[in-house]
Image (cartoon, rainbow, N blue to C red; front, side, top):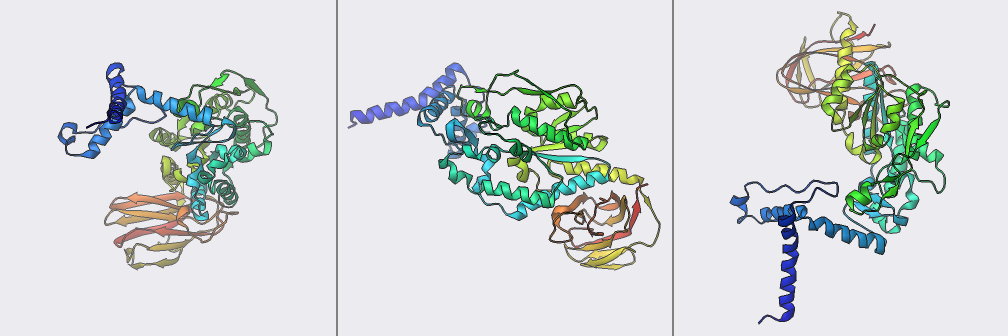
Amino acid sequence: MRTLPNIIATLLFAAFLLVPLGSLAVMGPAQEYGQRKFAEYPTHLIDTLHSSSDVRDVLTSALFERSPATPLAIRTHNHVLYHYAGYIDTPRIVSGKNGWLFVKSQFWGGECISDKKFANTLMILDTLSAIAAAGGLSLIFTVSPDKVSIHPEQLHWRAAAYVGCRLKNGQRWRKLASEYAPALVDHTTAILRAKKPNTLYHFATDSHWNANSVELAIKQLAAVLDGKAQTRSEKAVVHRQPMRNTDLRNRMLLLDVLEPDNGTIEIHPHINDVRPIIFIRDSFYGIAHAALAKMYPKATHYRIGHDIDKYSTAISQQPGPVVVNTVERNLFGRFQSFHAAGIGSAVLKRNMSQAKLCKFSRGRPLRNVAAFSHLRFRGSQFEATGPNAQITLAVPAMRHACLRVRLGLEKKAVFKLHLPPLHGRRYEAVFEDARSISLDLPAGNHDLRFILPDDRAIDLLGIDPTDTAMKFTLADVDFGFLP
């Protein structure tokens, strides 16, 4: 016999299920909230609903997420934790001191990241800039700091388990950047150098920097683009947007209190660089867009990772500088290979296009070969005896050196060109994968031409003609120069 408490519990559970679904039926689906997409409705619903608990779970999630009651419940729950308990911890956000909020992704899982992983990305960025420069293009990488790098004093002691090695990681990668990628523009240095007590450089409840950081960062960028310090500039602070709808408190936690905004930085018209600069940017340069548009009125802006086709085409035709900006938390995940984010492919295409202007001699093929491994050859017929076939070449001491490789493949393969380190860079080996360029080539004959970076610390190159054991032909491997 059911007791009264059991009946009440059953009724409450039924209400728990029916209220969200009822509000969905009466009021229609809610708009997307929390800066994420709704779960998709399962496909083949009728056929699989009775046979699969996974399909039922997906359907339940999709319905509950769309219910107008769900964001109300989330808002109420977060309001109590944030305003009364004083601490909130969700899968994406954790509280700091004094009502501050930190996005967890900036902590990199709290793990202690190896020097090798940091160095790999830094060498890739340095190689990208070197190949671009060889092809006549100025490619500048900039990094916008995470909040934890500028305001670690606002971390809550309870968040220590999430933060882990993050502060040490930040110090370590910046030290390595000075050794592996010294041209990298780290906006953290400019902000920390100017940091004053009781002054905010990031929004307390947003993941982005505010106008104070924007001002410092764009002056640092202008000095790099102009090749000199911007001492003549003045700024005008315009309070266009007195309150900000922040991404962490308002859009993710669904709380309604807005945060005061420091205003939007504008630059006076006499700082007016009319070069057709390309900005491939993260959301941090999006915050700075008003200032950048004033300083660089002919610039074109693209979103990194989103407008790949557009900015890849633009890079191949670009006469002016290209500035690639990323936020710190995405730096080492975004650039793990030469072709990441579509930038390497565009830079290489431009380099190889410019290399068509190079002048080559018609001498004896392979006369610059210094060594080879995992290869057998007779005349111009070669056979790679394993996946590590490599030819080492001695590069003539000249400026604007070019390389030409005429290669015939019996089947598709990956061709690799290993570049030496540049002057002033730390290196553990002459050739490292992070300083290599790879090309996916179909079967057939290929005439590959490259313009090499000038600032080589060692005049050696490595060529991996194929990535598999196979026969191929080398009609020529020769050096030339760009007139």
